[in-house]
Length: 170
Image 1: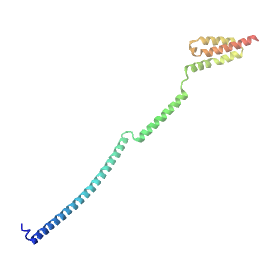
Image 2: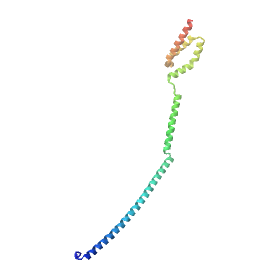
Image 3: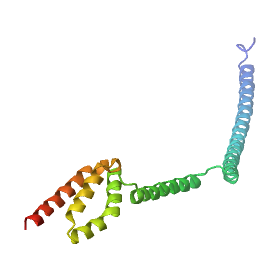
Image 4: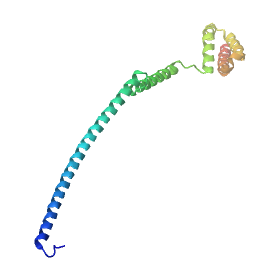
């Protein structure tokens, strides 16, 4: 090459390279700007699509919940209501049980015996027939249906016997 010999040719070649480099740099800067703009547009579109997809998903979820409730599914309000009703029903049944619970067999047997015999015993005692009351208590004490209240009947019989002996001593 004659570039060593001719400094003007060398300068001319360097200027052409510089001009070509500047044109290439300008071209690359324009391409870079186009890519940045395309990236920004794609990012904007992607955000819009993502936002739209999120809204559609939310709307589908709401529609599903409404459909489930319409078709008889349990929503949160329905489950809360049914739980409250169940609790209140249990509470009412518990109170009714406490109020109406059956008495134990001993208490029920004594109540039956008292209702059947107390008036006649009071009348006989007031008329002074203590021996009749004592005999009646002895007979009832030996009956199988009064097995649970034998101690009470024995206590009453002994009490009436003591009163009878006291009356006879006078």
